[in-house]
Image 1: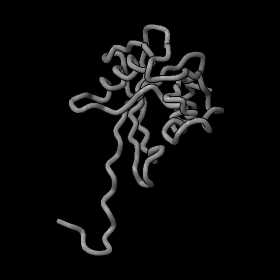
Image 2: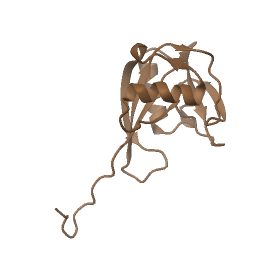
Image 3: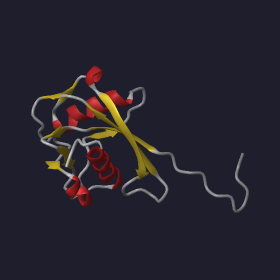
Image 4: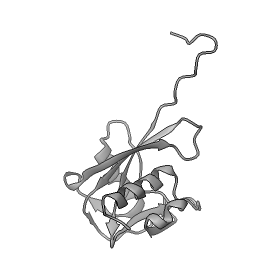
Length: 143
C-alpha cells in the first residue's frame, strides 16, 4: 500500500552492528579509522547469516587483532541512538558484547590508531560510543 499525499515517509531501517567492549585498567578500547578524529568501538555491521556475537568476534579479529571465543562472549546491552553521519531519524542499533580476549590489541589496516578511553573522552565519540561509555561507567566497569 502506498502512503497518500501528506503521509509521513517510512522510517529508515536501523543500522545493525555488533561491537566488543575490551576493558583494561578501567579504560575501554576504542579506535579511529580512515584518518578520522572520532573514536569508535571495535565492531561493525552484522553480515547476512551471521549472529551478532559472530560479527563481534570477527570484527575484533579484523580491526584490532584479538581473538574472542564466541562461547565466552556475553551480551552487555544494546544501544539504539541516532546514527553518526546519517540522516536524522536513522538509528544505529549496536549490540555490545563483553568477554576475554587473547592477544595484544594492535591497529589493523582498517584502523589508524587505538585509544584506551574513559567517560572523559565521550566528546570524541559518536552518539553510540558516548552512550556506551555512560552505560559502562554506570555498571562500574570504567572511569
